[in-house]
Image (cartoon, rainbow, N blue to C red; front, top):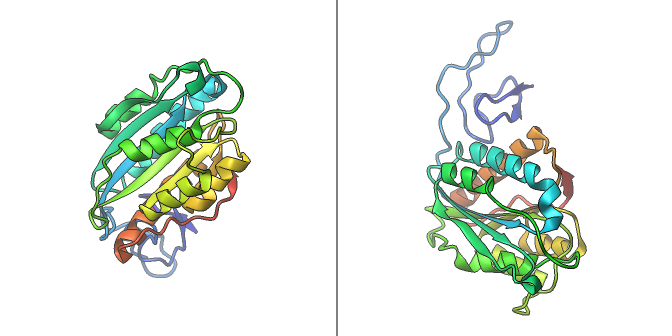
Length: 252
């Protein structure tokens, strides 16, 4: 096995191209080393990406602030290699009962702007352990101007969340919100503390869940980016979203 020089996916030595990113590889005659003979190229079915991120900014997330920034920056760097263009939104949310409403800090900005903005999030405040995660995700889903043409662009919601969520003020359940996300063709990825209602949300969305930590593993971050890239390529090829789910809580 070798690593693809482009996306780091492990592939067979005999492979002529990477199944994940389509990097072209040439295998020389037997007994000789593997040689890369063409520059990396992007997948044929590539498109633009609407990349929206929701961050819980309450005090419970403060201990993970370094991990949130590192994870976000690494994922963005990796995903930008897999898409034509990438528009970024970052919204933070707090405890509505304590007057902490959603704040949009990146509005359709560039990846470079978003990477700077994620490091400026101020964490603190909030009341009881339960947070307004459903409200935050629902608000983010509604405020992003998602590209309507599925052959031009795909959407991803990435959430950094701690603790369990309260019920949504709108009355929307986790299952209803997740189903709506799935119907809109948006891939949901939560980096969070695994809790029952959040699991219901991810299950209904056909999304992915990873355990939040302050020391994210780079291989896991690469896996997240690869799943985003593979989902985009597969969905554009078929004209429908293939979220590549399997809602298992994995360590990041």
